Length: 292
Ligand code: SAM
Image (cartoon, rainbow, N blue to C red; front, side, top):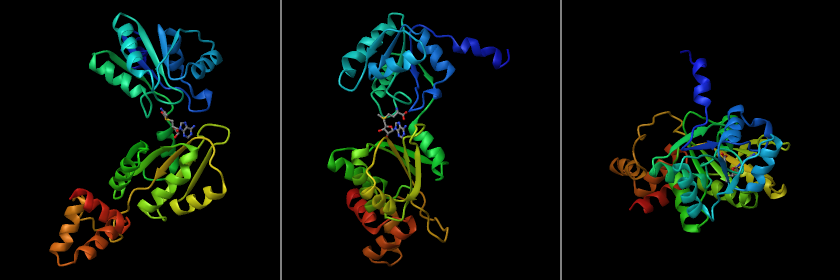
């Protein structure tokens, strides 16, 4: 059978299944034909905010029983949803925007279903992180998704320290009221000259993509109040200008040890490592202290 011939079969909505249905991150026209079919045919929909989902369903003329599944009821609701699926029903999980389970409570429901051997089918579609990375103009071959940085002070600092010598492009989600503080912390960690793409209100009327440096982004937002939703795409640390990357694969401590063995003092070694990895000296220093 040809690949096209198999499509209708693959598109059939099955019982005993959880469908992860990606929904628009702003522009309702981004919903897929397959997403609408699944939403119309499942037995029920689990939604992060039923009011948001009701607006989406109304726009496309879909009527379906909704139950809420969000951060504060995810434990007991997760069990209930799993039970209903195991008893023979099909469920579509949707969150307020984008791909369920990416930086939202859907992650826990999928883990529960995996534990109970429930079939999980992704229905792909919009995702803020991937849209931002694709349009950022920064290297997209290797990247890491950091989601929201931890809010607890110590955890947050530990996360920033662990990223100090990250060479892959980093993707971070941030709320508008925390944007300036986060940009300032990133500038302190990576240096003000590090490149960033600040992606705002993707797919919406006020969509904006600012390709700049961390230092300039901090200055800009001090006089332009952040509004809307943001994804930050930050360039990874650059390799030494010479292109001699002998240290790739070494930990920061091994890299410092290499220079100390070659006769440098500890401070000189830290400076050399910082230059090789294109990160500030204090980031290397902190990483050494952390790993001791
Ligand atoms: N599951 C979603 C996804 O697939 O992208 C992400 C959910 S997370 C709770 C929400 C965060 O995603 C926002 O705080 C913002 O950082 C980012 N986001 C969502 N929609 C966006 C948009 N239209 N433009 C920029 N960032 C967006």
